[in-house]
Amino acid sequence: MEFLNYLISGISLGSIYAIIALGYTMVYGIAKMLNFAHGDVIMVGGYISFCTVFYLGLPSWLSVLIAMAVCTVLGVVIEGLAYKPLRSAPSLAVLITAIGVSYFLQNAALLIWGATPKVYVPVVEGSMPLFGGKLSISYVSLLTVVVCIIIMVGLTLFTGKTKMGKAMRACSEDKGAAQLMGINVNRTISMTFAIGSALAAVAGVLQCSFIPMLEPTTGSMPGIKAFTAAVFGGIGSIPGAFLGGLLLGIIESLAKAYISTQLANSIVFAVLIIVLLVRPAGLLGKYVPEKV
Amino acid sequence: MAVILDVQDMNVYYGAIHAVKGISFQVEEGEIVTLIGANGAGKTTTLQTVSGLLRSRTGSITFMGQNISAVPAFKLVSHGLAQVPEGRRIFLQMTVEENLEMGAFTQGSSAVAPHMERVYAQFPRLKERRRQIAGTLSGGEQQMLAMGRALMSDPKLLMLDEPSMGLAPILVEQIFDIIQQLNKAGSTILLVEQNAQMALSVAHRGYVLETGRVTLTGPGRELLEDEAVKKAYLGS
Image 1 (tube, chains in turn blue, cyan):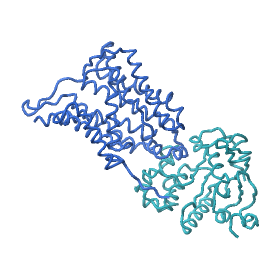
Image 2 (image 1 turned 180 degrees about the vertical axis):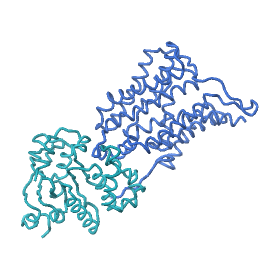
Image 3 (image 1 turned 180 degrees about the horizontal axis):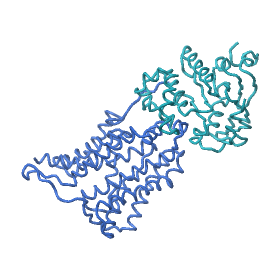
Image 4 (image 1 turned 45 degrees about the vertical axis):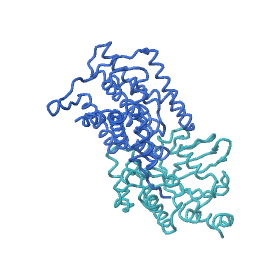
């Protein structure tokens, strides 16, 4: 029973990582850049949701939608102002800019909301007892897992079936060829940032519901872990991000329970290193042979 | 015959390198026009400038009576311009059918099916393999896919960049047969080739490029017989 409890907590933690990792992986897949500010968009999402509930007294579900809308705009603005001018710059310049944007967001949050942690009220409360109370699953955990699955299925359908989604895949493979098809590559990249940032807002709300504390650095650790999850599963791959996130959450939760709380993060990253040694492209990373 | 593409005084630079030095040429409706020349003569650069991926510093590019020299590449497809890029550049991780759908990106959804039927009629091989991932096709099939993909936008002018590159001789002949068939079916074609022999034998007119300049121009058959061309490009 104890094991099951840890496993469930790992799955829901992993689902949050997975949602963040999906954002990372989509942006990487299409813009070929690591958006290190992605984690901080999560934090902004959390604060927006917090403020709309705390100051405006709006219902939780509405606060989620507002957070998504604000983060979508934020993501598109960040991309347009910071990354778009660097489209043909070396990738190191873009990477450093992304780190800059990350610090900018953290410090802006510090200025606006202060350093004192805010206590976030979870979007759903309570838990569901199972096996006559021996096991209980919090509704937040359930919600997280369900939302994660919906997002992953939704994104898979979007990129596999819709015209816009296919255009995104085309851009991710070859931007020059995509332009020759009449695809507006800049608009496609903005759209990817919009989707990724909306997902970050959802992840922010769930993360804060799971650990109900909100401060300007709230997004950085989950951001880094989700990035790890995306690499773990195979960066650029949607099912990879999902699997990577889940596994990472489960490993972290079990390591905390059975090995050591302090060592949990080290164990997570050690597993990553081992996986990458054996499979450099990640668990589901694709290798397509190229004919010339 | 009406001139559908009119390039005047094209000058293209890569940084400080002057790659195309004042090229002018025309393509008339219904023609196959070829630009031939050695590696580095500026053929691909010229084509990429017409399709908007690169910019000319001077002159003008007029397509169907409109100056397109400042129009972004992605907008030119709806003007009726399609390019089969050098090295094919099909979407290797997508299926054959998805590649064709991308070719019709600017078309309304109702136009996709009839265009696809037409392309499949031209390339039955693609129909057989429509659910296959494009990366698993052979080189010749990939070239057919790249051509089919470009035809999906129902272009007024089809530009082909080195369609014979990397293909076995038998496939090269097949590709050039297809080019002639497409032309007979009404497509106007601008062809860039290193294989001067093949290109000149199918083209109505040709332009010989040397280090960024047009050095010779004339009907394909005549260029094929030209002593200077023979010596430089036909190995005789």
